[in-house]
Image 1 (cartoon, rainbow over the protein chains, first blue to last red):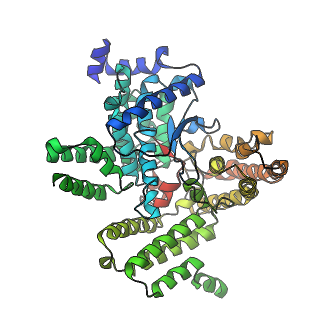
Image 2 (cartoon, rainbow over the protein chains, first blue to last red):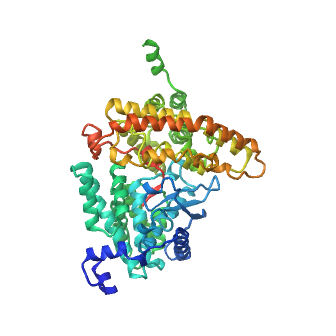
Image 3 (cartoon, rainbow over the protein chains, first blue to last red):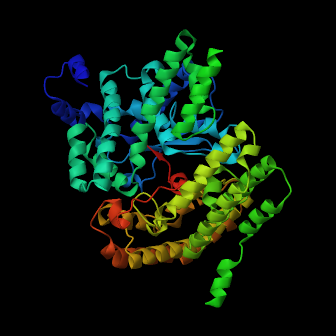
Length: 286
Length: 280
């Protein structure tokens, strides 16, 4: 994070930089339609780059839509709703246009990588289109796998032409930090007796996320205990398995076949995923 | 009392099917796949909103029965499902099916573990509950007259669903399993937003703003009548209960351990897979 500060020539502390990112008008749209258009633009810029990292892509398309007004104030910045190949329904990447001064441009690339492609839409649609597994496995949603994949997808940005802008790069780091913060505040509130205010303060002190976002987030952890832990835990496992495959296979390592192997059995518990990746490594060695 | 005991002891249709499978002479691999099929059909039939989300046809005209009795019945049926799986010999299926077997086992065991905590009593939060019924209507097919019959059938059953929510909240108050007050601050407004003055502005009636060709005006007339006569009063009643009776009993603490007698409840597979979407 400090390297990015140096890169943009910012004079001040990380906390000052966070304040700057939260408040400077240049980072915010004033028209909801422009915000949605920019999300679509990012998504469409990622789409063609996917062939660099994946052998198999889903057939089902996805769209970018606004979160319904009645729920937007309580909702997070975005979420994904699965489509259905059987019902001819596309996937949907929902984006929040409530309070535009809390929706910074620098988070839009990381967010889009997570929710649409190569994040949730790509993973979930591939799983729905599997043909060699019983029905219940096509809709499996082991949270550490699904959300770990979403966070891992954010880290693929540089290979997909994202994070060229230093503020977007900082956005990615902020997003990663935010999932680490979840490990602290979720366990803090639910297991260690932290108050809601303590959790909000800790979050504010350690990230550039906007105030409204932080409060909505903390309230979400209150009603979904443990869910927020899945992101970082799943991502760490995926990165560990990729490093293992890369080390074991050396020049034979191909990122496309690795990703196909990770996604090709649908969502899995992490221990079963690890068995699969080890089998993949053994098979590639032959 | 005797009658009640007899009712509980009688096998449900799903339990009958499981028993029939156990008696069959089929080989273990066939039995395993028959069990997967039975459980899949059961899951869709018991959770029609999930079926809609998955795009499985045939269940779009109803909601999940969320009465306390139905929730209790499903808990017993999950126990039977676990027993039916145990009766199949894992060693007699091939390696691929052993993986399927183990994943299925894990899902059932998660659901069983979740039964330790009556999560269903936390029937409304800022992120889930009856103010989000429209999210299911949003993804229903809306192309043919038949699709619209399904939508109208679901609209007609909204009041029953809301009554079930209220019953669960009441049980929660009686047993001390309630949500933290702080997260409920937007809920009354969210409930209000379901019943605007103009029926065609209502989130639940979005499909009626513009009818596709081949769908008669009658469908819209029905929907508007159901909305005015049944849905609006039902949401008002629930809101009234929520604000005047439930909120005063909501808790001041936020830790889940304080809602469950100190035991952290396991998350069930069901809870995971019915959440409104995949948040970041």
